[in-house]
Length: 131
Image (cartoon, rainbow, N blue to C red; front, side):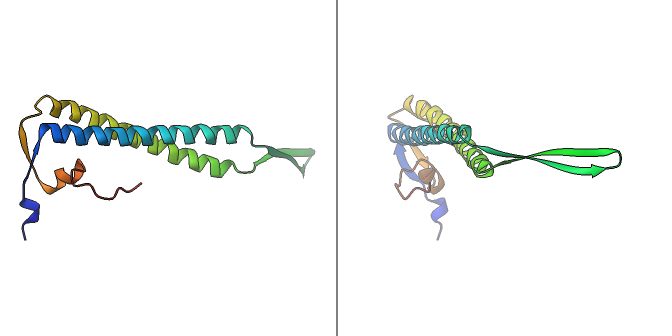
């Protein structure tokens, strides 16, 4: 079957509307992750550290080493990395869909032939979204 070669007709207005919906989705997700990032930073500000001083005998005296254990810092740092990645991902896609929406709005009555990948890209076929 040659489904990949099939073309579908959509107006510029339909594509622009779909692109704006994608822009809205990614803008909301970006805001969600920015809020999450702020929560993580606040949690990090309230972390406590246990400070130990290790002492070692060496020729002619002692050698000291300060060791800090910050419980939870690694987990929060990992979550901050995820949040930063998500924020940038959604920001880039929001920008991309915004520009495409504006472009297609310039020719709302023109009909475009889209292949199945384009239809899926603009989510003109609906479908389940992966988070």
